[in-house]
Length: 136
Image (cartoon, rainbow, N blue to C red):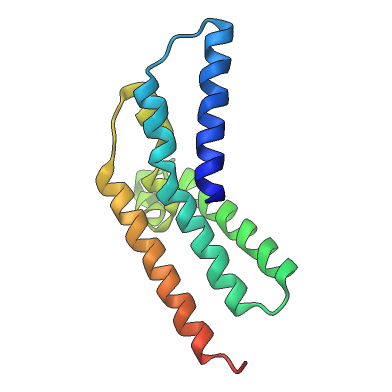
């Protein structure tokens, strides 16, 4: 629920801000960028869920999850610089969410969103397996 509230709230603020400064844009593209960000954000949450099961201390798990998501974003960015290493970025969630393509070229990558949803479900399943194997 917080994810939905955040996405809707930011979309409204951006829309109103653009109207105030007189900027034109496609409201459908703005809506799609927020809608298609949900699978990406779910994967980020799934990474945090896995780490919260693996690590005993909540603060350490949060820091590790944040660091891992940032490192994955960096790997995606750096791997795109050299075609020889571009394949490495395929393992990063940010490779499957391109907000620029959505806003500028109005390209909606629903297949990529599906890949992110499958990755999220896999992370949740991994978390469940890890949690049930832990000695509580």
